[in-house]
Length: 209
Image (cartoon, rainbow, N blue to C red; front, side, top):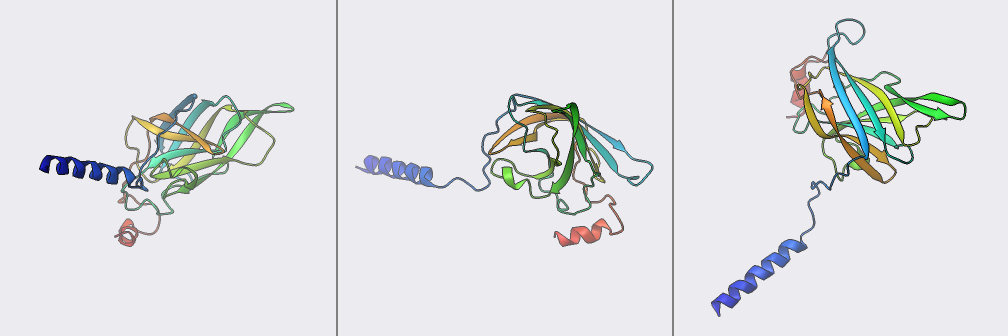
């Protein structure tokens, strides 16, 4: 009799576990893009407006086989980084990038604007955690019709984390769908001790303690 009760208890516990809702922090499956190549480089700037910080260049090639992506994301992560939401971490020029396209007159150039989302891109937060740099095309009649190649730039005081392969570091958003790809090269690593402007990092870090 005690054996039957034990089996019933185990069964009830299993049913209880299966009935629990999924964690709000659980990540869904990442769908790979049909064709996506991404490579990044980092260069320390020694002169000009951005002297003393790093210039990151991301070269992308993609073929989604259908309409243009709504926007592109460079998923820099920086999970557990105390200063991740400091507004000085990332700086952008306008345009922040360009890609090849076509219009009625022939070949043309698509220009992009960039913004930094320290808590992640809200449109893909259900499947992706961590900070993101979001790039979206500026208004114009130039399109890439699902296939494109371009170069994108951002500046940061954060040093590169070294050459590596970063899985699912690029996201292409198409309406309700998102696909992901691997980035090869360098991305910023968390370092809240580097100078980023007139305010010391010590004062910045105190905000996040």
